[in-house]
Length: 221
Ligand code: DC
Image (tube, rainbow, N blue to C red; front, side):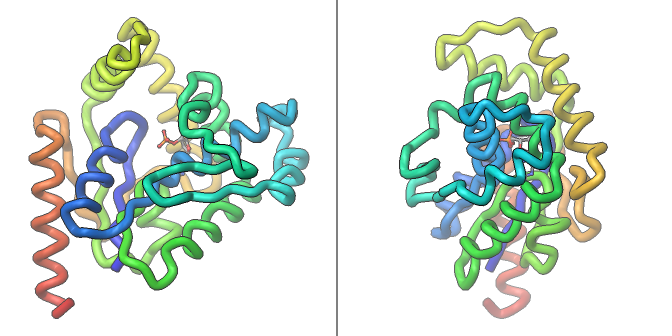
């Protein structure tokens, strides 16, 4: 059984997906981390993020593993810290526009999920990668609220950024994610839409779990 959670940057998809996966007793896949790992590899190789042919070439020698416990391994090295820097964050939404990158990662995501029960989180999980998912969610929240949550998250890591800067960076990423030619961010037609602006993380996860269990029961799983 595959459950997908898609939505814009900073909406809390990862923490909701992780918590939902724990409640359901299944694995969780953070596909944004995969785009981030590709971006890190591109930056490390000194390749321009806008140079599609070279980025595509680099994919051929790339060893990307999503290990248990959410560990991201790039050529054998754990890079969970390095993929969260502002530089990699910005580069990830640029390389995510390229067809070869999307095809490479979508194939990898399907392979990882093959024959397993998983909660998969990203931008295109319900629309492109797993169109037959048992349950699809599209999570939204007001831009100001998303930026505020991001500010709190960064502050917890000792990084202070003003809200206006975060809002501007977020708007730029939203714009690129929603308007790219391939697999743009949009809700799958059969997705359950949840606006989390005035909900706690627990309330969001609760709604999701209820929906998944209701469907599983209805389909006799
Ligand atoms: O969810 P995130 O912020 O970690 O994702 C980083 C970038 O990767 C984001 O700007 C868009 C891209 N992405 C994507 O295009 N498709 C996905 N399924 C996941 C992420």
